[in-house]
Image 1 (cartoon, rainbow, N blue to C red):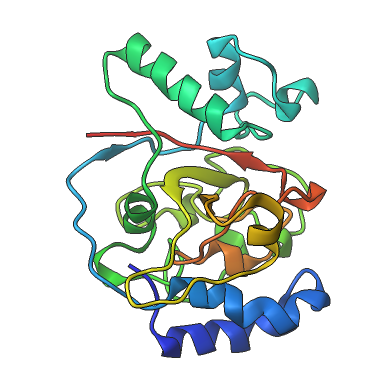
Image 2 (tube, helix red, strand yellow):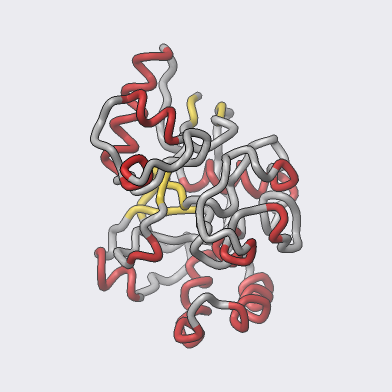
Length: 233
């Protein structure tokens, strides 16, 4: 998992002119360096839910209603506004209901679902395509049904990994082996040991839909579109 320096430079050259906020440009390369260096990680076989958890699925749990439910968004759209604790509690409930040990994916498992053995830059391939995902480039300005982009499916048939809503993982931020710790706005706002999010959302740029891109729970309103999917051994 991760990116070599050629990929870091390619990403910076491709996405700096297209950032959702031009003020990000001076810091952008340091964010992408969180992906460096590439390194091998053992990942045991696992089952992944094809889609992120939807509003209808989350409502069935009966927990506190997150923002997407309070807003009355459609049942087949991904739930968002979910905290990490709520996502983990839902996983425990679903595990009891289904008799399967559902949980959040690790960061490595999420990247394996997205990049696979070919190390795809995006879940669908190596070139960004706004028709394959719901990022800000798609122009929707809202979530979409979780099955709306079959052309964006990953190598193993997992859908909606790029865009729509960001997804919680069970991993915490740390530099990759041989990499450096990146102090940035996230570490200043939420601490050095923050959870990792993956995949980007409809309110964020396509750089966050890259398979290797690492993000975290920024408290700004543009970043509140966070949901999750489940995996099991």
